Length: 348
Image 1 (cartoon, rainbow, N blue to C red):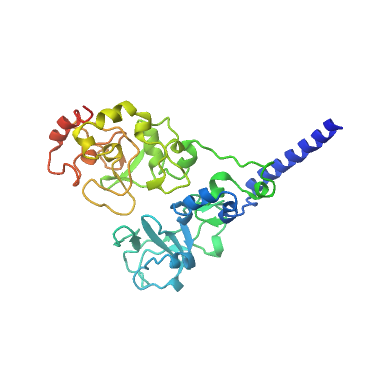
Image 2 (image 1 turned 90 degrees about the vertical axis):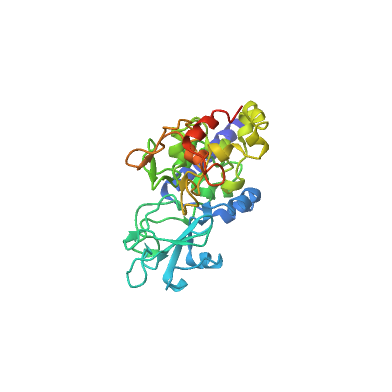
């Protein structure tokens, strides 16, 4: 009898899991992050302060955040806002196309930069359909047009990167949490699905900076290619507070020696030199200072090393002294030859 009951329960579990897999394949069974909150409140509270859920927002939600609009536009002209939480905001018109001009079709700055309140051109004058799947939404399908708007390429279940984009559809788990466990890919490849630009074997660059959402490209090319992102980051939290493993946790001997040096005594930390802001998403803050930290880590201390290819389209696998040493807040008045000599003594 017990064996019979066990067999019945096994079949029930099998078909429950089969249904879960089917839901994921068909794109049904997505319940939304608010439902996850009821059991995972701590993770949810971190998540809503990160940039992930705000990669795409309907106009009425973005309006509540107090974002300004491109000159001449009102909220009645906007269907969605791209971003607007951490670095920049771009605006989508009622037809689903990204706004790149004024209402008369003239070139105009339409990208709002949060850090300094400035506006930038974004493909000024071009017709730009919104085709940012699957990295700005949850459960993306390339088929159709969201809300029937011709400029929006594809459809999805929820705007922004919600819990289920990484954890999978949760309806079966909600109904029976003990029997149906959600699994998540903890490899760097999972994050690399979106934190990549172009092919993984190159690091795209533009105008003297690494281009944004390229951390996976850098990681694979750099000194820590064998690490997974979640070994250092809590993926639920915003970048500035997401660090759960610090450099000193792995490089304790180097860190203890560095703490006794001039730089260490002056509160210069590892990431100041090994993770400089060599990438740009919204604004160039200063010469050799963008707004996204590099994930290459290794510094080439040669005065002759040039970080970018001759055509300036790609970055190489090591940081140059310009970004690690010669920025305005450090040694901008010195030469690269000087930096090359001094860099060899940094950890001594």
